[in-house]
Image 1 (cartoon, rainbow, N blue to C red):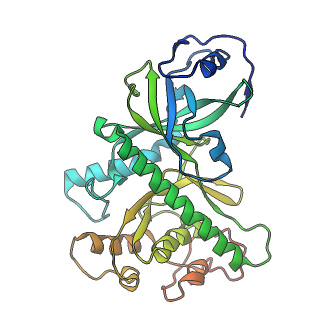
Image 2: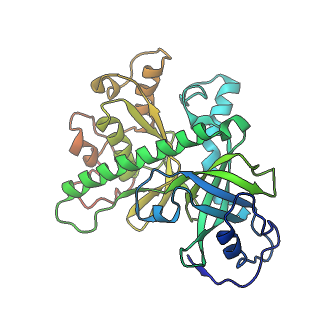
Image 3: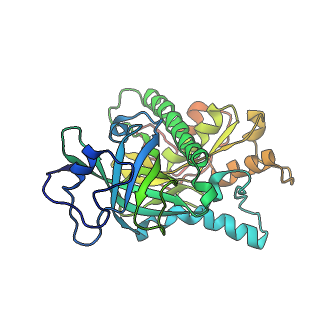
Length: 335
């Protein structure tokens, strides 16, 4: 991150940015790239997340998008939509992927690494790394759809704060307790652009502060190496919501001891009793509530001590990877 001095005008999206303020337009003249210059002009239209990095993407803020490129290490971002599409074609429902009518889980989108150019408030431009996500279908680029996705992510971030508080209390006086964080995501309205293959003026899209070469699935289909912190968080969301919400597709990066999640999905499970949700599924039905019972057990195959700290009735199991939580007898390698 850093401030860019005002020196020259970029060459791709000209200085007549549709809908962009004159002040920011003049500041943007500082930017020059070798190959890829400014491609989109955006305005933040929904920004509910509250964290330190959120100050860089505030409601009403205008930003420019440059350096748009694909990152091979980010391919897991689209695995869920591929799984849902395959399930629709084959009719095989063993993995119980949420349908398009049930959740945005399978909503097709494209993802790019971008450079976000935002005013620093002092006449210069701040350069931030980001993730740009644009829905394939035009109907999914409407404000209410994109706003709903941001609200889901914000809700997961709220759960993460509560979970982190619980872990800190459980760990006692240890100062190096790991935490779950959720990357700041906002909804942006496209003011102008030069490449309709990416987005058109009038579209709404997701913009996330995120910088990494690779992305890892922590909780996705149940076959991931067991890392206790995200698995316990997955369990915590269902437990603390009283069985009404199930978080899905926990993906992101590990930053020293913390985990940074990007674009998680929240499934609403309805008014199902928590004891029923957390029991091993026995029904063969395909209704929404039964599917979520099965999903919980499929995606969370075992619990370790951190899960039992808030839900002591849940069964244990063998963990397969260090949990990273500084707790005595954390269950690594045993129930």
